[in-house]
Length: 389
Ligand code: FAS
Ligand code: PHB
Image (cartoon, rainbow, N blue to C red):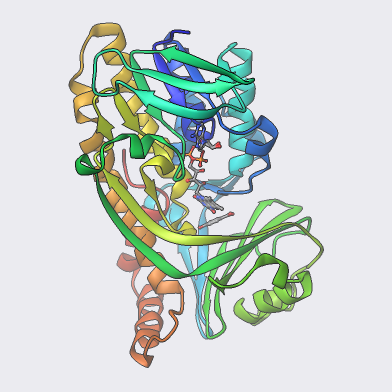
């Protein structure tokens, strides 16, 4: 088998990169470890930055998002005394779009199918060879047979647990990491959202997030110790915890119901540098992980794709390699700013086990300053809606 760009991973990064390259006449093959059903069963991100909305429209997959997505002009940050609205539109002139990652991935799969792109599911034992040569190739097993895919470039879009990052020799890589001592227990329920906009709640009982997918599908999270297991959390226990963390006027009026999905996600900040080794490029979670507090994970994957797809088109159609030479540095510049924002939102909104009373005061003061200062609210808003590409 031969193609121009071999893409490891059929999540949002791989699919969006493939879609944009295919639209420019570049051939790709996507190698995906899981079945399509499994990929689409994962409940992940919920908020798209304005830049991500633009990229999906450019890729030709924005129609359903525009019909079914919910534009949001702001969100709320609360503690036990204050409820502060961050008015994105007033402060930045931009909105965000509430449209689940599952829907984004579905739209991309449908568009790729319509273009007849080769997406090979259920592959295993993927090995990237010759990445630091001019003739890279990928070997993999599928339907019991060992196969080889020759290519000009390889895009590692295989997430945090993929093979791409570790294909780069350890001595060529540098990792930066912060593992947080808690996780998020997430619930999806067929209930109307507790609020018309997202609420990030920092209460004496811990952190909670009230989000949504549509007017009859709500997405909620509460902070839990890393030692907790999802089977220890009945629906009743979850709803009680959530209501303990949300503002009383919201908790008293919200609708609860049976969970249709329940899972615990650990929180970490992680970056691996560089994002390139020869003809291999890392994209999305293969290169970086952010705590979901800033709603940046999926959106960073999209901005990585923005930098890489144009670079690959220039290299493959004009022999111009200046952009692929600049990819890692350009993408990392934006990645680190989003990494900072996600870390700041996480430390501002969560209680850390064993913290002293000073830390709790700092959280209260941060929210009080947001309540008083339009400048502070604008700084948060410009990061939340997405910094320029
Ligand atoms: P992905 O991990 O989505 O996709 C990688 C793909 O590669 C997967 O389909 C995988 O099966 C495949 N793969 C892995 N190894 C392979 C191999 N060896 N060979 C072939 N294929 C391989 N972000 C937010 O903004 N908000 C959130 O609320 C949020 N919640 C999250 C909850 C969880 C539990 C997780 C894990 C992530 C969450 N994220 C969230 C972040 C998430 O949305 C990612 O940023 C997004 O999925 C990144 O997309 P990809 O880079 O495509 O990686
Ligand atoms: C979600 O709706 O899943 C969501 C929204 C905002 C976040 C994290 C998760 O910051």
